[in-house]
Image (cartoon, rainbow, N blue to C red; front, top):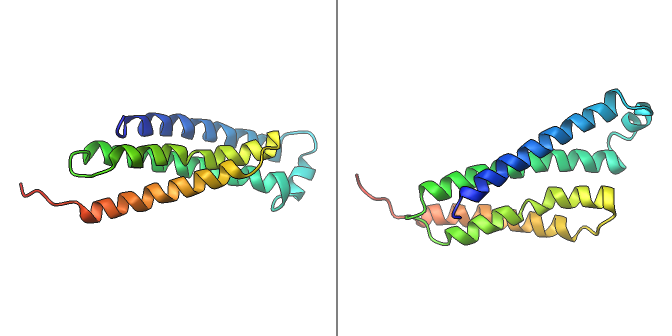
Amino acid sequence: MNGKNNIAIGFLTMGFFMAYGFLLIYLRDFAPGKEEWVNTYSIGKHFETRLAHVHGNLFAFLNILIGYLLLHFKTELSHVKIISWLALIGLLMPLGILSEVYLGFPPIFVLIGAISMTISVVWLGISFFKMKMVSQ
């Protein structure tokens, strides 16, 4: 579990948000009423969906990177499992944005995900500073 799931779920999440990008392109360029969609470029649902798309791919990539690093340095780092879980929970941020836009959910998932991902990244950085180098 110490990183493998981050990589797998990261790639799956990235694939989802890449496909979601095609939906956004369709809505901007081909859908009926595309002019209205384009006119709301920086406000409302349009802005929120773009945030979800960008952060979804960013957080997916972070999970892939974090997972790789946790797998590679699992014996030298401490708290690998907690960092792994925090990064995965971080995916609630972009999914929470979509849940807000399409399902009317409250922003609590966005906050939980954003805080969780931030903690995982900072914790991993501190863990690397504290890591003892093994001479080869």
